[in-house]
Length: 68
Image (tube, rainbow, N blue to C red):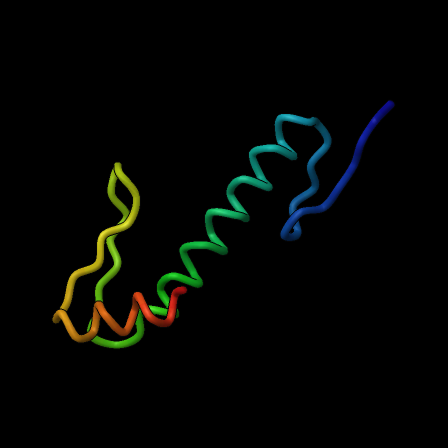
């Protein structure tokens, strides 16, 4: 049985491609929402342990409140 799907405009045919593309799409969605929640004045950096926020304490508190 052959599986063909389009994920974000890309044709994928194998299960490993589907897995890779879905993982990439999920990570991209999480990062986008996190950056939007951060707003102006807060930098979001991707680190080996996850994400780190840089900015004033008040701005970071706003990020935490918005992201809940």
